[in-house]
Length: 150
Ligand code: DQA
Image 1 (cartoon, protein in one colour):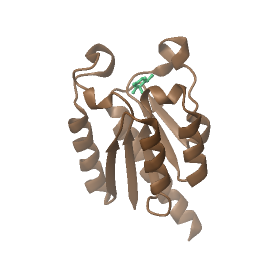
Image 2 (tube, protein in one colour):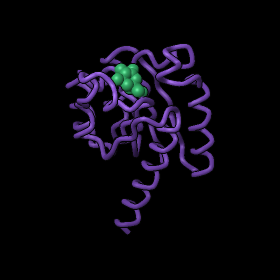
Image 3 (cartoon, helix red, strand yellow):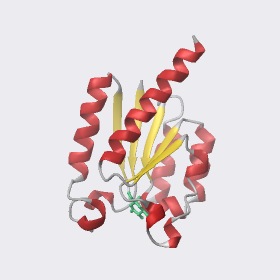
């Protein structure tokens, strides 16, 4: 089982960026927690970060046929990107959306996710743990679907 982890814009600055909102863990630390879960669950993860909408769209397109699931924090593109939403719809790869902060407890413009309706689910508000919970939820969902087929 292979899972693509995508971090959207400004997440390379985690740890330094608004720590009161996003916590003190760096992106590297989050990725290493995800690596531990992947090892424990015997799945492969590939990690990608970009500040550029088109590069994220490209990464999702390239994943077609190669990846079983996508874990994504679309960051600011959550609220704006029809292109990202269409990319997920196009490849039909089960996708879990995660956010460090609770986007529904913040400014009104963050209450709308263009990604949520095309994701299998969303985890929001648990800090770096949102990623871990999202990855576990995605792995269990993919396993359930595999078992249902056999
Ligand atoms: C975020 C929430 C977004 O609204 C924001 O633009 C981010 C981070 C989060 O993880 O809480 O960059 O996705």
